[in-house]
Length: 116
Image (cartoon, rainbow, N blue to C red; front, top):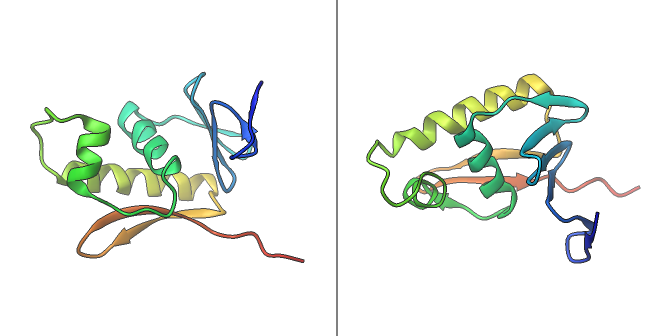
C-alpha cells in the first residue's frame, strides 16, 4: 500500500494510539480487536482522527458528519461521543482520548509517546 510521507502511514489508514481505522475497508480495530461502530460513530471517529488536537463545536461536527440537512438535535453529537467513549474504553483504547472542550465542543487528543 502506498505511504503518505507526511503521516508516515499507509494511505487510507488512520491511527490514534492503538486504534486503527481502515478508510478503504471501512473497518476499525483497537489493537487486534475488531470494533463494530455504527455508521455515525465511524464517521465521527474518522473526522476527529483526521483532525487531531483541534476542537469542534457540536454544530461543526453535525455539519461535517451528519450533513447540513440534519434535522435532529445537536445533542446527537453528545450521544455519539458517549457511545464511542464507552466502546473504546471497553476495547482498551490507549494513546489518545476524546475530550470535552467545555463551552465549545469536542476534540480528539493524541497522547505523546514517552521518550526513553
